[in-house]
Length: 169
Image 1 (tube, rainbow, N blue to C red):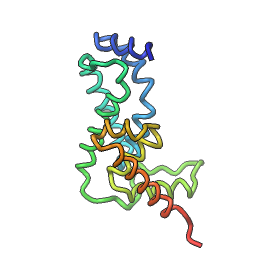
Image 2: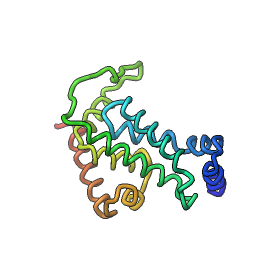
Image 3: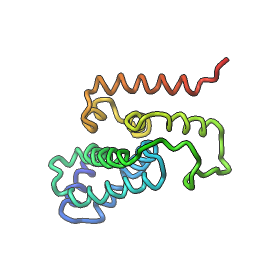
Image 4: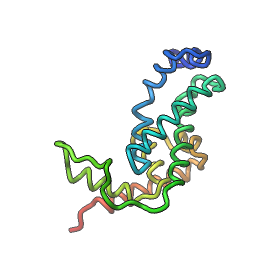
């Protein structure tokens, strides 16, 4: 963690290589969370790009270098929420971003469809928990929600997905 703190300090002084190293530690989590919280790969890429631009612009204002990861995730959460506000009705059809590859599986399609049925906040919370590996306390501080509320919402979300994905006998 000390190495990360040093890179944060260097990036705060304008060192682009240090910022690139920091970005390298979080880019996969940023993109996975954005992709599973938003409707398209384009929106996810936009949210991550906007997050990185803001992080680079304001890293000198980051007071605690050891809080870099939660700080950048807070920026991403704000970008995702802003993008979600632009959605006005759910999309049920395939679009140009839907790609079927050699690794196509019906299970992943069913999971994607079940995820799309969740509201935006639920997708964000689930993505941060499952893909980002954040605890309910971390999600609480990032999203401004009580940690007990985060835990209960995650429990309900997972239950809903289980019901959706469990075949009826």
